[in-house]
Length: 324
Image 1 (spheres, rainbow, N blue to C red):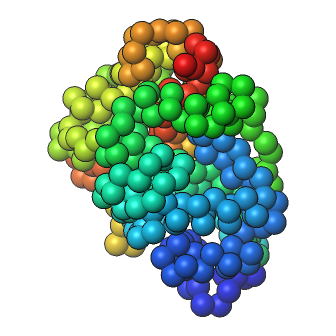
Image 2 (cartoon, helix red, strand yellow; image 1 turned 90 degrees about the horizontal axis):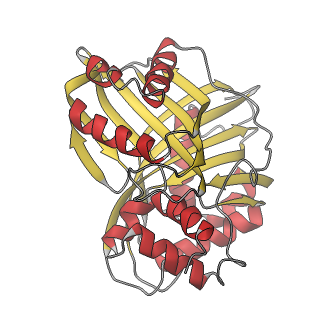
């Protein structure tokens, strides 16, 4: 791990280790060491530049969710220490909504939800990041419908003219990482599957998925089998039937003691002009950022984890309609 702290044995150990050190061990000051001063952090909700803003957001989150844990389920990665490495880090987070904050008045609710963060690192620092939290799962556990939460959020942020704009190709900012992943066959297989699905070839699902496939979808949804995979992907694509689908990053890996697996970061960009996961068509221009992790077994795709931020999609629809 040339250029990285000697206490980390490999890149997954670095990603898992600094996450625990920052969040659970309260080493927020270590962000000065582990995050580049001008890091670009993109989430579906916004684009943030600068480590000072990351530190402020970290403290605000821990003030609102003081017992938050971040359990690393997997790190799917590519690259080299010399040229830079990109990790797609999937986490299961638990937290109690114990204080007022960005999610409104404290509810006291105990939450469980997933996060996937794509982070580029070199010389012991992360300098580029794409982050998706399962906001749909978070707000539902607090008693909100994602659309109602987005409407309330816009009001709390000062209204349609003042509130932060969600991530789109128009609001995105360039960062130092220019890579597109690796050329592993498992990554190519995952990218091909998503491309076929988004091209309306839904026959790819029963042809590829294990009949007992375990599925984790936005909103904290756990499901099983090709029929449920078809239900999720059909509903999403039907809402944006003419939107442009793009794959931005693909990693495949075949590691000891792990199933063959892949991480794909993708997007949809176009109008909400179909009936599907987001209700009656509105014509709103919508950008959907997604990350999908998949694992294979002897009978096909055996596990899938896909995240999008439903509240960011609803925010774009509401802003197009005048929000309130």
